[in-house]
Length: 113
Length: 114
Image (cartoon, rainbow over the protein chains, first blue to last red):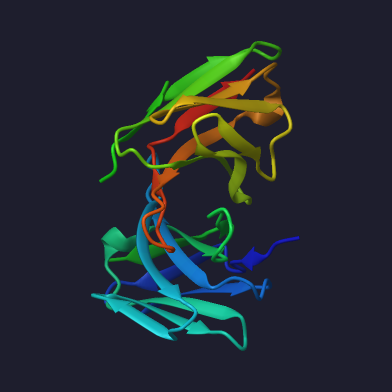
């Protein structure tokens, strides 16, 4: 039973436009959420995070929004660039535990020039 | 970047043979993890360690064992490799300074079991 779901396996966007990647979770104990980016033949790298006390966190072109009542978060990339083409993983964790995050299955973003 | 290396980076082996993958970190991070990545499944946790000689199972631990005799090394062993264990394996580390921290991932090991 997936506790973290990324329902869109892939997303295609034109360069310069906004990319919106979505993530849903079911465990109400999750209070910290992270996004990782993964290029082919490399390990995932941390991109941005948000704790449950916030509803938005911004870092340059990347913004993560959290809707706790809907158990939904989204990653916005504006403007999208071809170099953003990668697989994006959403992850969630609960504080006070053994720091074991739960990952979604990933969304493959392709940004066309 | 955290100094995490994995060896070997690529390996082809035959069904029934034992295989050991190594993860080495230079960051003195307490937590270490082994994941496998398969199409359609994302990252699935195999085993993790919360200190030297302290390990626990993840969601897909069957057929795998781990050992951590030093802070910097975390070994993943496939006792008798099967074709279903063909995958890309990632090691990750995490510090515990502060409640919320991201994981740092190694470059991965691509394992093929024939």
